[in-house]
Each structure stands twice: as structure tokens, then as C-alpha cells.
Amino acid sequence: MVTVLDVRTAEVAPVLYRIPEAVQALGLSRSVVYDLIRAGRLRTVKEGRTRLVPASAITEYVALLEREAGVAR
Image 1: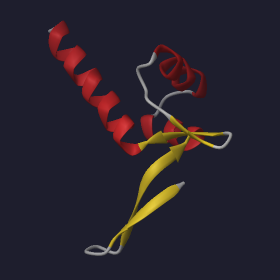
Image 2 (image 1 turned 120 degrees about the vertical axis):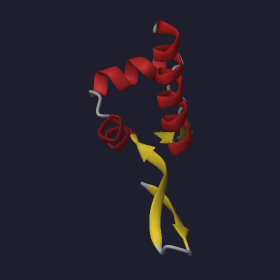
Image 3 (image 1 turned 90 degrees about the vertical axis):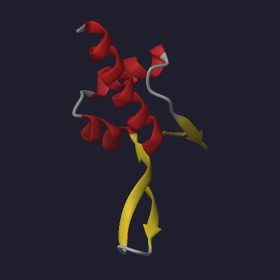
């Protein structure tokens, strides 16, 4: 996990998640997360051979789900 230090609170906040960490953060299965990545619904970046999910991509995906839920009502 790549992190950034917030000097005001001295807490470490994740900036990039490895796939298992993204799975845990989203509460979804590994295969569902990979399906979302393939479908373009969850953005990732690569550093070398490692695929990483930016924290902002997780936030964007949750916002997408909320928008879709609002349309469905």
C-alpha cells in the first residue's frame, strides 16, 4: 500500500491500493473487482507489473453506484 502522511492528524491515508486491499475496501470478491476493472467501471494504474487502484478510483466507483441507484428509484 502506498500512503501519504497527513501532518495535521499524523495519520497515514492510503493513496494506492493493491488489488487485495481494494477488494477489502470495497467489500467485493476478487473476481468481481477484476470484472469491474475489465468493464472500465473501476480505474487502475500500473507501476511496473503491479496493478494498483487509486483511492480516488474507489471514491468514483462508489459515487457511480450512488448515481445509478438514484436513477433506479
